Length: 254
Image (cartoon, rainbow, N blue to C red):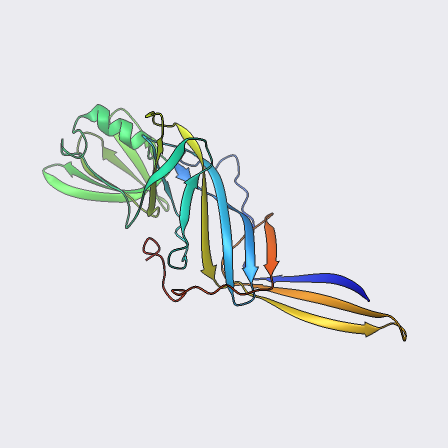
């Protein structure tokens, strides 16, 4: 009996974004790409992401907080002798320039703000005897002022008066440590997790060619309602995994 395999991929919301030369990104923003997906028939998919990122004192931030099934989310370094020792998530990193959390001098503020360029921030500052706030993308750090861009408006914030900094839109924070005690300047991070929303459905067709020969064709339909991926490996698994807590999310995702 002759067997042939035909795979039909039907996906939702698949797109590719190409950065132009005018777009600028923060070096400490980790943007991992999906490298492979293993799909099960019950709607679960095992995703592997990977991407390089520069580190600030061992730290990086990211938007990628997938709705991973409880107990399946892992972040790790592909570099030798490195580990991801801290993973945190929340409304955004907060820095208080109070002399305890961070130094109050202008030089320290400028250095910290330089590491946040092209990220969306909210700044609390003192000006003309009153506390004020401004939010937007940090586009410039000058000798006396920093500039935030929000839609079509720009805000010039006096550097010396800044009291508090909060990073917006990047809730995932990770710290990478090296076994030799040195802080790595950059690294190659990976993320693995199991999530719902991407089943595949097999359909079989049998065609009788003659009295002695039949052709059996398998058509696999992939329904992707999970997340976008481009140029990655997709593996189809016939079996179905069973996890005790598939109805619960991992705490970091919550």
